[in-house]
Length: 51
Image 1: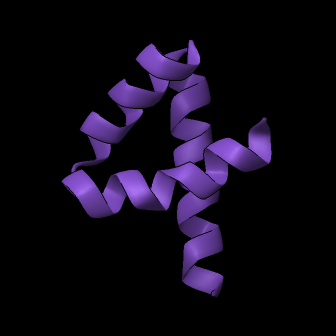
Image 2 (image 1 turned 180 degrees about the vertical axis):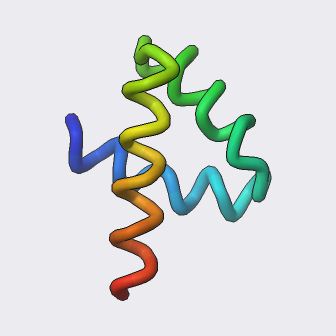
C-alpha cells in the first residue's frame, strides 16, 4: 500500500500542482491523517527528485 500511495502522488501533483489539495485527497481517499499524508507526500517528492 505504501508504495502504491507514493507512486500515485506524482500523478496527483501533475493534475493539480497544489500540495494541500494532494494531501487532502490522500487524507480522504486513503483514510490518512494530515501527518501521514504529508509524510507520504515528502517521500514521493524526494523519490521524484532522484529520478
